[in-house]
Image 1 (spheres, rainbow, N blue to C red):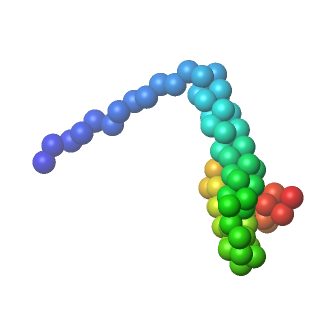
Image 2: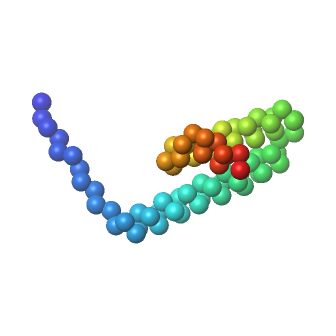
Length: 80
């Protein structure tokens, strides 16, 4: 059994920060505008409520995974 040496990746910190800032902004923008477009094409009130609930839950999940916020802070951010 051989030993695989771990790969060392060195990032330019400024480039990494710029990339993650752009990615966060893109995801946030999609989370704000996406539900509006989806709701435009859905007729029933239960389906609309389902879409709203799904986007809220997705936002809460992403907030809790992508940040170091505590659960109560993630919930407060989602409620805001």
